[in-house]
Image 1 (cartoon, helix red, strand yellow):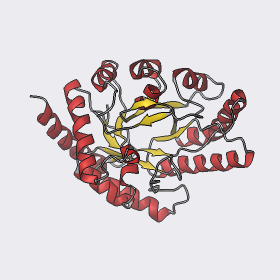
Image 2 (cartoon, rainbow, N blue to C red; image 1 turned 90 degrees about the vertical axis):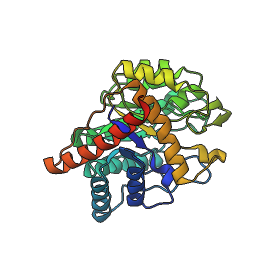
Image 3 (cartoon, rainbow, N blue to C red; image 1 turned 30 degrees about the vertical axis):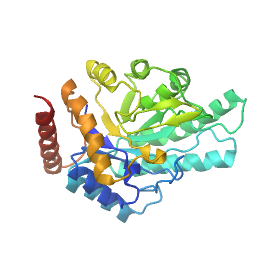
Length: 318
């Protein structure tokens, strides 16, 4: 794997450059930056960036990550790709195309979105065709700029892509050959699929992982802190290690929506310690993301990365 990242939603009250510095301070290797406007949480996290951000903001974020020695692993650009209203879909296409351009400017290899949500029962195939059409329209921009578009399954009622079967149907659709998978075991667990079986089903198409625990069912979802739910991460990371998973594993702390602690230091340290324990024991191979940067900048970031990784492996392998 490349290292440990963190979804920026847990730091939504900080400017993105401060969030980057804080993650580096706690030993994270990367950040997943949120662009979405209204994720289903209360309180609603403020997005850290937007496709409408000017060049000055883009340069500030890029230089902040370079100075901190961490990667911008993904941009999270969740929107409703299967919206019934054609004008809404057109706006969502523009949003995703803007996210792809922003990713290229930040040298971020992956843009993450979801299958969207159905707002009416029935018409399943129509919603599916609208989702596929949206992706087909965005992919030419993504492919031209060398950005990977990854789809994340959801678990609440109404999600179009929510389990192994629906994800496979999407990936096998004509014209979506370059679409990849954002693997979040919590959503598959909530919908009754084994996280290990879900990983096996898409192992050669998974480019990034959200590490999130879960308990409950679609009508009573809980995403607690890592290690406090029902997912067997020891077995899951064992399977991932056995096939040589080479993406980032990102802590995705959404437990604040269920009144779990929101203190930055507490959350970042606890989530990181949980992931370090499994990563070190499973002896993942830490790989450097391919970057198109001058050698000097790349070398400095590699040294910072190696220092953090050697510290945590030394702490957990006895």
